[in-house]
Amino acid sequence: MQRPTIVAVLGVDGSGKTTQTQLLAASLRRDGIAAAAYKNPGGRPWLNSVAHRFGKVDGPDLVGERAVVVLETVIRWLAIARALIFAAVTGKVAVMDRYSFCQYAIMRARGDRGERVVRRLFGVLPEPTVVCLLKAPPVVAQRRVELRGKDREDAGYLAALEQAYRSLPEFPRFVEVDASGQIDDVHRALRTAVDSALAGRQH
Image (cartoon, rainbow, N blue to C red):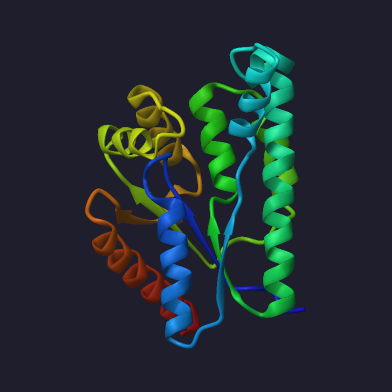
């Protein structure tokens, strides 16, 4: 198995990560590049839904914040590792909807402890070939989340999460992509950024 080419797409909830990773993988395939999009969730929404069934407010109310952080970290790590194995076996470009950096940023935004330990766990995973950070104003991201009709996000938390991404030591290596516009416009900007980054890695 060869080390796969990894395109990691990051951003706050509502920035369009899932939509754009799907579009990016599809556009690469149309151009003859074998690619697949992989979702790498942390599982907190699922845990919250379980908590609701037991009459609890959310996951932390059910099992405690520390346990939620542990579960979230393990679930995301397993999802990423599974995606990388599939990409390595098939030889496809792995277009990743979230990566390890999302876990670090989320923990910083929420004030969770243990980032150093989490970094050791994720440190065994390969560094992405290119990391794209989708930028969307908190109010825009919040509106998009509400339009999905599945959950809600606080604009203040989204702003804190965006700042958390920018506080990461890896941030200078991220390629920022404006995600505030229409889906097609964002896709073109993301594809341009990815093409440029991948071309630069080949020289």
